[in-house]
Length: 500
Image 1 (cartoon, rainbow, N blue to C red):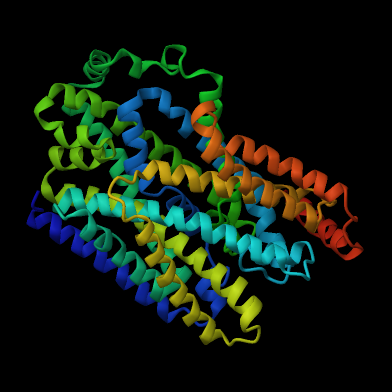
Image 2: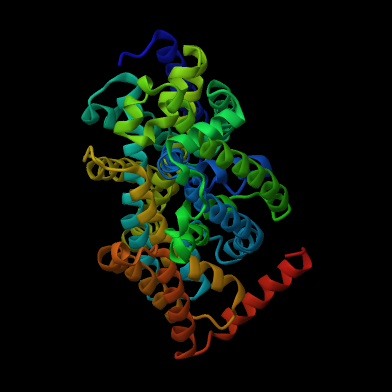
């Protein structure tokens, strides 16, 4: 397929705008704090849309529509779990984490927070947390690279090996240059573009299939099972629990938690929650509708279904090109690129912070200057991006599979540690270590040995075992120091006084 002139112009303008924002952010980036966390200056609107855009990657416009296209409404349990998990994360984690990280030596990263929260002079927690971030984010970043490659492959007719580099280039550039502010500002633009695409496209797909009633009849004609929430009983309790369990992952995603840490004040959080959850629900409904009613459209127009039959994750791309004027299609397809770039940029930045703040400054150059740290951070962005491209080089890679593995890894390794550390004063360093190791190891072992045979998503045993390990590790060792216990009580008192 050869891309039309309108598509090339639209894509070119979008990419140029993102890079321009990166250079504008460069002028506001004066320290490593600015580069990694934007100086804790994000308002409610930017906090909300940046958190949403960093969460909803290419999975939202490719993986989720593809899953609904193949499996029908039974795949929507994932979205239900995500909505519940995201709301709980905003409600119970965002405010406490924002205050706690500020009170613990102004922690800039999760490993930094864990180190100071548990007074870990050995720095084992810092190293372990940084390694978990690098391992799972390498896979997560690869999912973004794959999604971008699929995008350029499908739209511009490029070979996968070339599309891999084109899909990553602009994201690497503006993240490298502008850091956290560039990522947050571009996220806001990208989130706006995504919701426009996901509200408009399903409406046009349904109308193009003959309206709501005709569309449902066509889906039923294709496969009645696609209207069944339980797949005729074959989904079962384990399947539903596995899909809902995606929501547990929110408590441990470093790129989302970083948005909470960067909010300018606690008062920002409730308003940001309302904005963010509204945006999320509308986007999820739109993405699911595109995939589900895509069945109806291609049943009515079977000659146009070829590209989707080969790869269901292209359903949004194909429908956008078929149903819209090339100029509008260019905007809609830019939304897919926006979803991919917004999450990939956040992930690259978190990896950069782990390498720079937690390993380079933590162990090699404790007195490194701000300018030096910013440039080391930029080098780390480039290095992680190249590693992700290497992982993504297999043209058979699937976006949803890569996201599933990394999401479970972070959710189980960090989720219990973050959640319990904010609310339980008796938690200790050994408990945090035990929970992190147990959660991450369980996901890796479960995915390797048991996931296929049991059908249970590795997040479930990983999160549960992580929680148990934290409690046992904390109770079997020495109690927290008086200073640690006093700080926890002070933070909780401050939160209570402000309605948290």
